[in-house]
Image (cartoon, rainbow, N blue to C red; front, side, top):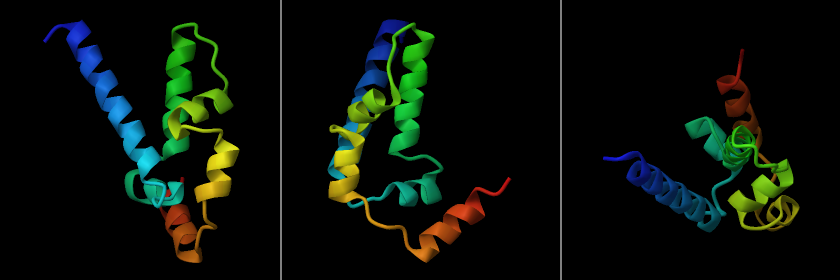
Length: 97
């Protein structure tokens, strides 16, 4: 496989992942962090970092909007729920240094 095709396939997979996360508003970021070790915010930070490596200026809010499909504050107001005590404990347990 040549580099151009690989990049196109990776981009398509990324777009599908983002679309999936946008559709699954029932899945909270803390659940993603507890199960997979990353969340929508992590993905937006990786996107911003990749842009910076290419010399493309991109702010955190802009990167989050790319991942969330709307401003982050709007997404939080519509879809984010308060984390339960069990979710917070699981997060603390899996993120000990």
